Picture 1: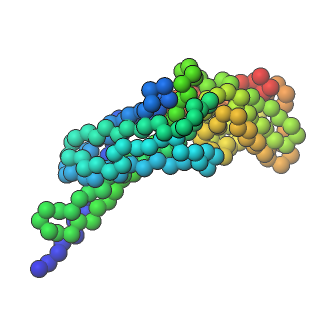
Picture 2: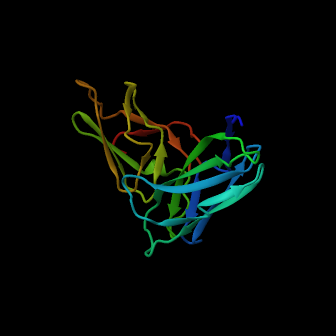
Picture 3: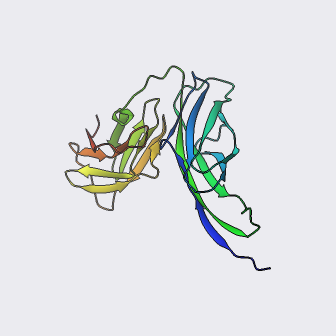
Length: 219
């Protein structure tokens, strides 16, 4: 008996580009839709960022069968034994894996992963639509330093422009955590004038790009 190898893609599409979990609610939720033409197994897994290995959430269900065109509600339940004081960042991966064909033929499943940020809000933290305005920028010799003095995670594009010189620098990550300090080395021989402006490209909580934001150095 011959065995034919079929290839198919499983597309699991989350309803938003970020998961928001409010500690005061005890959980956060998101719907994930199976856009494939056949049922798939949805595997959901949490990932810690290198700067924060604490286990704050548990996912349910971690594995679920989702019929074609149907939605699966995934819950992110708070399991932190103590309240958090600053916004925290995790990531979640949604992966749809095709099930074996009912006719006995071998199926080569091509999985598609969706990897999204998870923002966890303390119970007493009010919403803030522009947390990047709290970033403090300074220069000392051959380096540009940015500090996040707020309780919010600041998400932004890695590109930083120093104006009016149009000097282009690159942040190491697409986020700056509460209390975190990042130092960017300037090109050899370069310097930043005291009246310079720093241009960044922030991202909203739900992953939408905002217009560039300029701030005067030292303010």
